[in-house]
Amino acid sequence: HPELRLSEVKTLEDCAEYFRSFADYIIADAPSSERGELSSGILSLADSVILTVRSGRATPEKLKAEAEMLESLGARLEGCILNDIFR
Image 1 (cartoon, one colour):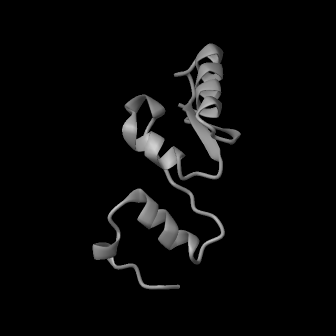
Image 2 (tube, rainbow, N blue to C red; image 1 turned 135 degrees about the vertical axis):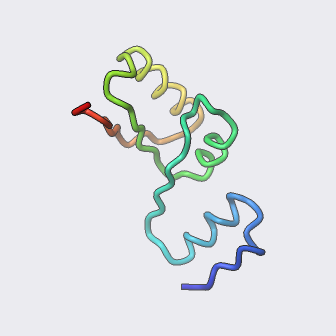
């Protein structure tokens, strides 16, 4: 794979293009969509999304609203990870 030169990576698009040049899958751990701009920037580059939810923190209504919001932005929601189930 080509060498990553940090001086050449100016944007998220540059970073995604670099990794796509040699990787079949790229997994990006992004902040909550409630945090705004960074998540939407990553979302615009994603082929699909897996929503991660902390157990006991989200209601079914909130999950449905989040899924609908992601899909309204053009995200292909593949599934959900339920995190911290034994806490």
